[in-house]
Structures are given as structure tokens and as C-alpha cells.
Image 1 (cartoon, rainbow, N blue to C red):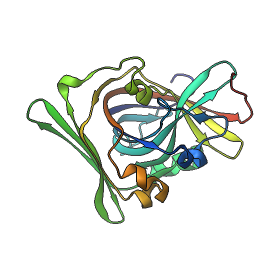
Image 2: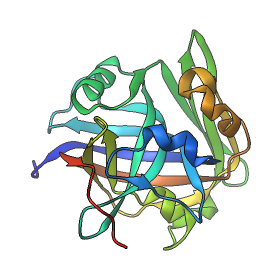
Image 3: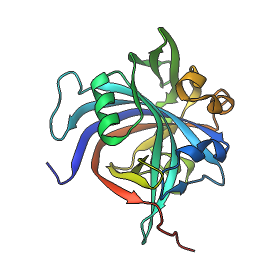
Length: 249
């Protein structure tokens, strides 16, 4: 197993519904030693649904924990390490169907996982379209879903400098440990192919799942919506970084 490899899996069929929010809403979640990474002056959060496949943790494929769904809410930050800026993601909420995964991630890595029953569907539609749908059961009801339709003909390499690149090309993750400490980990994968999402779907109990402060933003039409085919992904190491590193002027 390569050095510092924590997790190896395939992440596939990623849906990203992106919403502009007031930066003040994200302020309590920003890890020390990072700052918001903005897209053309806009603070974006993404509702993300995708599939884990062939998952191995520390080289071990745990029975019944190899293939599963995930839905998460994330936003974007950057960290200056003294030499360069690193662009990364911060997770506000992550939902999986496996309590064991949620417990381990929360205890060991200060993640924000919750375990709920989940299901997904992939349906071929007329005209070369495919509909993807992720659903999760909360408070006894299957009334939470994230989905959209993708044209197979629209799938293309991500264009440098595009909003798709801003959303998908984040190769670092940051978790707030305390007022002065942050965990940093590296995410490796090839550049994915992407497409626009037609007729995006997001219905959920936003106040209960994500907080009342997100209701005005997540209950309106998304700013943008993208699909990515995905690939094998490797998550490496966990490093602790501290606040106080001055960014370049």
C-alpha cells in the first residue's frame, strides 16, 4: 500500500448542485489557517450525491462497507502553506447508510457524518439522457432527494478556468479541530469528465439537516448544477496545521 494511503475507492456518478450563499453563513465553519475560496466573488456551497465503489480503508475492504451512497453539503476554502495556495473543501454535513463508517469518521477524523437509510436510481431516458437520483430517509420518511438529468452527448473534459474546474478540482480537505487547529488531508484523482445537469432536483428538510441559516439559500434554484463521471480516488494522510501562517501580499 502506498505511503500514507488512508482510503482508496472509486467515486462515480457525482451530482453537484451549487448555491450562492452569504459568506457570513459560512464563517462559523471555516477552519483555522484557511479562508473562503470564491468563484468570481461568490461564496458557493454544493449539495453533492455520488457512489462509493470498491472501497478499501488502510488496504482492507470491510464486508458490507465496500459499495454505498453518500450525500454531502460542502463549501470551498484555500490554505497558504508558506509557499503556495492549496484549494480545498470543507464538509458541513455528510450522510451515508453505514453507521460504522459514520462513527469511525467522526471519532477519528472529526468529520460530520450521519447514518441514514439511502437508495439511488439510474434511469435511461429517451434521447440519450440519463436520470440520476439519490434519496435518504430522515425522520421516518423518504422525502429527501437529490438528482438531475444528464445528456450523454454533453459529457466533456473539464475546461481549465471554468466553473466546473472550480467546483470539481479541489485536491485537499480541511476539518476544523479547534479555534487554532485544522486537519488537512490530500485527495488524488485524475481530472474528471463533466456535463451540465438538466432539471436539477433537491428536496430536503434543510432546517433539520443543515441548519435554519441555510434555508433561504438551499430552497431556491441552484446557481449551477454539474455532473462528473468520477474515477478511482486515493485519500492520503492527515496533517495538523495551525492558524497564524500569513498569506502573501
